[in-house]
Image 1 (tube, rainbow, N blue to C red):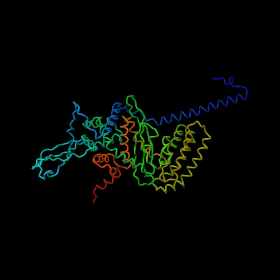
Image 2 (cartoon, rainbow, N blue to C red):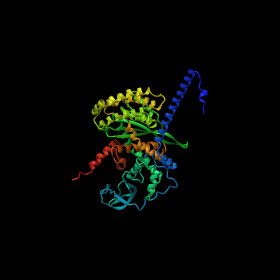
Image 3 (tube, rainbow, N blue to C red):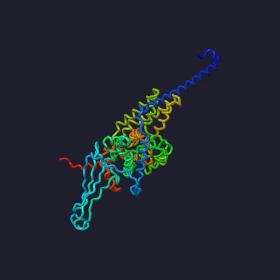
Image 4 (tube, helix red, strand yellow):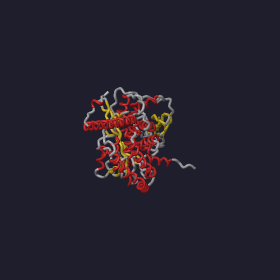
Length: 508
């Protein structure tokens, strides 16, 4: 033990200096302890519970690469030369129930007008999936010959999502929804199908996903155009792993989400979300994604967005949820009374928002001016006074400085009824990616990332409109091969729902 009597100086000035030095050391140590507690609490909250089961890394690498390779195949490309030894296509399982679609040619010979007589038929089998079970749909095309001129007649094979492929539109939709909505990697789907005695290899499913998303890309771009036509959007991004060939490891890429949702202010535009994949997080990417957009953008404080705001075409709206999260982390880690009071003040602003939700813009403006503006200005004035009472190096001080900066950029919501108090709409759009990322871990390539972005765009938009993505995609995949590109908007989820409603006869 230190002999304090032997080490303490006798001179009063030296003693005061020693006490001041020890106080400074203790203060510095307290700040360090507070920071470490804050970091530890954050790590505990961000940890995903017990370790998930180990995934087969090779399966996941191949899955991503094969989706990318399939998506890059263009329909106009000539088929590769037939190899000498070609793997035999296995027959579709005989135990599956079969349905038949008979497509007859015209009743008379188009060449001479004579009567037709049966000559034979061609049968094409495709594997279809009806939710809950597999069936084999037989497309029967009888061959007829003319009694007069012996001309052979046969109806053309209907256009299919994958030419010369075996899957029906319903099965393709099921694979997409299982992977990108239900977060089932393709090798797991293959295992599930095997239990029904249907042999679908992971590589086959990957080929289907790549070709399906390439076919659906025009529809995803139509959704993107709809999103960017809005007055205000929500933007966010999240990291995703992508395979780095030749390095034996992954690198960090990004998936960006841009969401249009006018429901909180009773707008007429349908909700929609578009996703974009990029190999990194450079600010040039959102500039490319939002080229042509003019309006408000709810976003976090990412520095890469600053270039978007400089010319005034896009105006920023900050996020109160991010401000709140800073104080919540400090309070959870240290129990700070100041952080607790900040949370209480922020909660009063959210209480006002509950009254404004679903109201017309003018009404929302009036509610905020009467109830929210005084609370907002009180919070802005209160924060700097608290900063003077605490150590400038503490996590709480960092949270206060962040809040002071971001509240200045949140002010537009008080004066505009079409704006929101936070960016939670975009953050909710990232949940599916966060869940899927835990299962498939990374993507095989940049093209595989683009395929994922297309699938997330379609499925996410369907969900926002309360449309069953399985039913919608099954119908769209059946129709889109012959659908005119200048009428692609007819296949958007909200237009599709209207068409389905018109097709159902009225009940007596």
